[in-house]
Length: 258
Image (tube, rainbow, N blue to C red):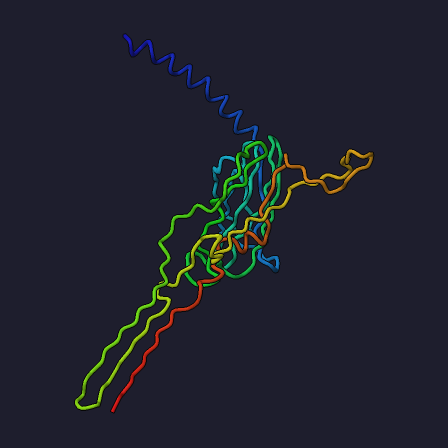
């Protein structure tokens, strides 16, 4: 008897939710575009990621044979588009705002040349910029130094090995091996400056004709409510090894007294 009483209620609840979910999907916007190379040729099979700038939620698709992609039913918010394909540099758009009913188009133009990731040589990238999010207007708080990294201790030690052999009489052979700067590694610290840690930003929107309080106006004033984006220089350089404090050195010496 109890199971018969619950079944109609469950059915009514499901029927009540379905129109709401359909309406929510139908009220979203659409973001579409094309992925091309530097010469304008289309790039099929590219991985396109749509990232919500606030929640970090992602949606992923791939480009068609014509190099096009589309994200339908996207909820209102600020987004950026990231594109990656083998043999090309990873591409990332500036943040765009999408409202219900909007249809935006973002074209990605990729350059040849993969980005070095995870290496340990000068010029390789060891920090992931995608893990860093610029706070939206109203999300800022107390100033904090962004240099809180965990990394192995840096000990550039020098070791010398010495051995003397008595060969009889005044004859003697001495051998020495010296190892200098053994643990040569880059350290993510503003003190050593081994790795580029500069986060440079630009204002998304600048406004002209802003009153200056003295009866005049000022052009090009940043509107902080529209947010900021990382500069191209930051996207290219942040997290790359700049220096490793010298080089490892091995010295070998022999001395013979007679």
